[in-house]
Image 1 (spheres, rainbow, N blue to C red):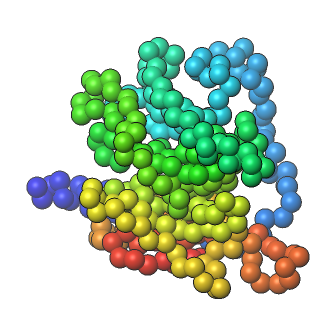
Image 2 (tube, rainbow, N blue to C red):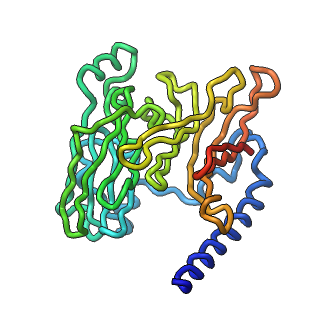
Length: 295
């Protein structure tokens, strides 16, 4: 037991020092404004889809012939599977052969929601559908999944079975729940989420227009689901935030001090309203105690 504990402490120590080294490096760029497009943003090499096929370095997924819009990936190394979130579909692929015996779940938006979406002026093909934006491992047997639901976010659970050998891939349609504050309304809205200790941490827009953004924590242990979010006030926590990613990172040697880090961009609240500088930001949320820090 002591040996295992020492190994865990050593691993956390390595993660801790690596994280702080990266943070020191990244802080030099943290508050620099994003101005235009520089030469550094131009890729050194460009390959067309045809070039990739001719290179024999990729294997196309043949199940995508329906013209689906793939937006979300989740790698399940333990089972040797890859989950894909697309328009109205979730796919389960084998890492050995992605085109052999793959499974899919058809999960469209409700018809009445599609009609309301179109009446609001949204595009029937590119917006008024259920685009899968969240695929997170909830526990050893279930995946938590959320989709835009034709601008009415919705979430649920996918059953993968108890054992690795199980070939179960089923959406529990009897326990669907609202995806507001967990998933964006717009399929193209930048957002970030991660699931840690059965809690879902999200940085997302929470209104139909995608203008109001917040950090949220939702889910939790079974039979004790709840959520919290950054306050709504005239002094906004976030100002048009565009989320990039979020990660659970050990902050000290004590697991109780672990934090969730959000990386995003937002408009500066200083200066005139017509000339807003875009700033890169890092937000930190406590896991054990309710707190938030913005840098």
